[in-house]
Image (cartoon, helix red, strand yellow):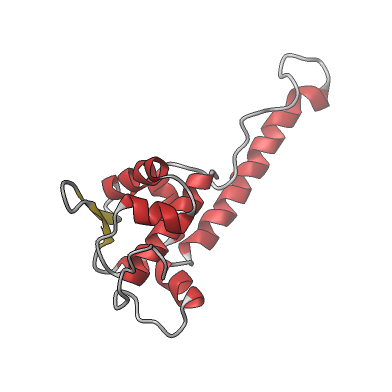
Length: 151
């Protein structure tokens, strides 16, 4: 899982909370990252149908009706990520040693099982639940978007 997952979840929760069209600069300020990174992540969420994107003079992003029900599984799938992955594999399949030649396959199996468990967990966590955890007495979509990006 990359940091883009955290950017995406943060953006969705913020958008659900403010309930208004929000420019990438305001999102970036709230997430504490740069607008280009936000636009890259939001483009993937838009492509997956998880947010609305508007271009032009009044550009920005907003949630679609029912966004509170978006699961973190949908988010990670929209980003094309796996919760657990390794880009490095130990050992060498061409070696005579059983440990050296077999460890990568064993670790791949462990990662696959961890991914199944993580996906199951992510399926049960929604944007609305995270919003409610952060702002327990607020109704999503009823807050005003403050000019400095704070909520």
